[in-house]
Image (cartoon, rainbow, N blue to C red):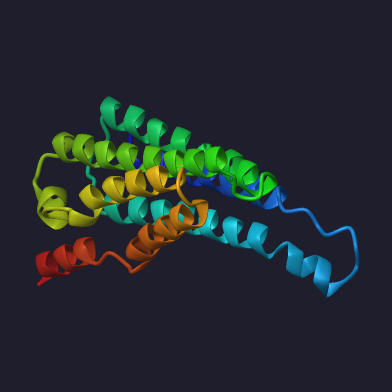
Length: 193
């Protein structure tokens, strides 16, 4: 199987995940800016979840620039990633409906940890499936990828102390990844030069 089919499937699933999230946003019942303002926390949690899905989509496409062949293990690892990403709309909605109570905020952190681990596994399986070391060289030590799960675990633990501190930790991880990861582009540019 070529990588184009896997990428198209991934794009389709992520489009559905984002659509489900936006459908969870309900218009206020009252026609006032105050009612709209009361929805700000819900909108911000949607933005955070959208950013996370976007980060995975972006990094997935960057990684697949260096993929020459797709293995069965890669297909399963990619499905695991998509499974965990598909849970984000549910945990986002639950967190919103309960006004950021402990259990939903902790579960939201778990729903962010799941794709982080799944993406790391996808990287490892993908590196092994390639005939060259381009992806391995481009990713290097992958400090952000190894550090992020530890930060998520900190956020999950913090949810039992302060839910807003936990959410702040989840935002920090998103900000770390929001800065575009240029490792693959640098590697491709160096190969061309």
